[in-house]
Length: 504
Image (tube, rainbow, N blue to C red; front, side, top):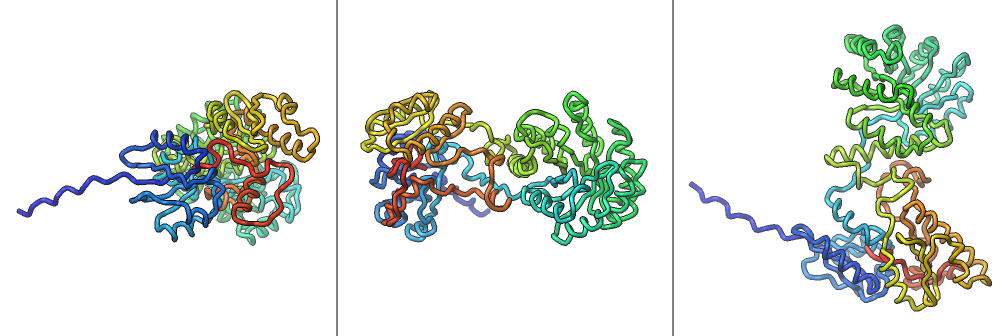
């Protein structure tokens, strides 16, 4: 008998160099000691500058000395240098870490998971509720916006007792732009016209009027014949199955205090009785008819959809407080899909629905801010938020308050209008962050999750990228690179970042 293969040696932990400057080295070293384990060996590397985030790639090439056996290098989250260039120079992978040191433990907790938000398994129907009142060009304009927000199917809502003479024209126009179309009407003649015109879906049919589905190629969305009648819905499902007709089944989500809980139970019961059918949930009765921020509502509904493997939603954006509902659900379906695939809670998958508050609102403790404030030797103001309030400090003093008006008399900028304006804007942001429990970063707008404006296409929004430099950081980085750009007026000039800002 052949000898057994010798046991393979134990795998050594991954050695990751955490690049830092002298100001943040003590704190980063404490964090590195906390996160090291049998799989990770973090090594703090001080490059001999105060603020590592402000270095250029050229400076890194000159100053960085990597420990022997380094597998990977993590640069500060706000480092703007060329990572590809550094990888070629040093021969090991380079990456940007989180903006704040406080987030490093979470970063390494999901480093192997790789948050992929490009996938999902839920189709979004987005309704134009007043399509009959719009001409074709206006319908197309609205449809393009909804597609950009994440909609897969544009639903043309037909208003009762209102003629829709250009229905066929609207369907053809949207098809010409590659858009899928559904038509939502209580008028069977309009649904009949829609399927003959090539509409992709019909909303909605029940067991009494399924004959309309046989008039064209459109896929019907099936509903109960009377409110709450799940048996009638299942009979319609069985009819479509017998015909080989594709369909969606929708038990109807009712508003809160008008059958909401019972309707949720019907969705669960439908899935129990029909474990493999495609189900659609219309969310507007809850999002539109509840005075609450839609990010939280959509997260909870998406949790039910994910667990029940519901395959489509119908979203509307009529009430102003629901104006980002489609965008929110697009993000929700991606984050919850990633979490379910990972067998995990919906935490740490991008946080796009965390609009009002942040899970880790403070980048530094009051004690850490006080330590850094004691090291400042210039007049430029730094602003931070911690659990005890808004901090503002320079070489002349360190002040803390929960109201920016309390801070202003200490700043002595009455004769400098531009600087006073800048400090007013920043301390106002800081006050909002403090009161809501949000992460604050000087020279950057507050993050409102997916509810805030997203630049670029939905595909680009799902990629994890780093923010553009703020006014102060951009100016300082340009100076470090030898640029001759004029220094901005008003902001903090050559600002030393807040605790954690300059580090991974």
